[in-house]
Length: 393
Image (cartoon, rainbow, N blue to C red; front, side):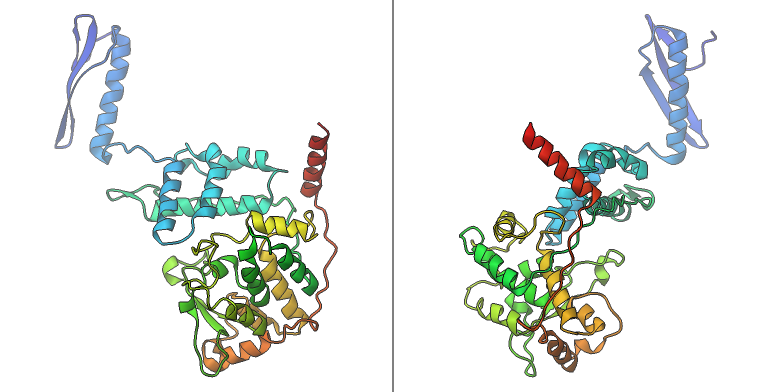
């Protein structure tokens, strides 16, 4: 085999001493191939020259970041904004064994096939969909924010990732007034006593879980035309974000409280905290849907199969009570904080008074909510059969 210029033998090992030129750029290569055979040395020699020319033309090769690295940076960005990253961490930990070590440019629908296969019958498709949304948010953060110098971590926007639909979505459980009392009594124990007021407030105004946990006295809107505690301003940083809207364009909303919700607020006014509903140690409650909630739910005799069992049932219950009270659809949407363009006057005192008038229609004894019989889905039935089989082992 002919010996190329720039490749020479020192002792028994072939070495490289070559100047690579591309246009006016020159780069010297001086290193050992570590090979004794010229055929092996020539292969390394040719590859090194080709790689050096690419670096001269396109810049040095950049080590691509893994999804795990992007996920860590995304979680840190959430915490820097003062938001709770617990749910994002849960989603990313769920995905990490499957895609954590993959380069972020390799994340696409096919990368989740093993994850979906392992989760079928174990978790609901709504949980999988939430995990995928978090993954896409982390990839978008890598594409739009994270940089190595001026080079983005991800060169383009992530591909569309579609979650499976296993037809296993559970219906909400609307509490009637006696069940509401029964749940409160079960929360009177020491471990869940601090959940009573937030629960009664949420079920009477339809606030989201984080809106309740993060509600502060400074958010109260004092309007002479309205009762004290009737209106609260929920800032955009604790309001549920719109995934289709940039963070800088998110907006807050007014939370309107009827007499029942105001009575709960009045009971909290002497708590000596900046928070309306502080935790047992005075700090902000991370989540209402904790072990205390789940234990109280079970001991109150509510179903644990075939229906949702979380705190979001309070919001669903208030929505159902508004419908039963004959409150028009457009006002129900605004009172629940949904995006709507039909009602624009609710930002003025007269508009807020009109919303409060509608919210006051939800009264104990006059609002009866009918509840459908829960249906057991295929996945739920499979989980129940698996649980029964495990109990026999």
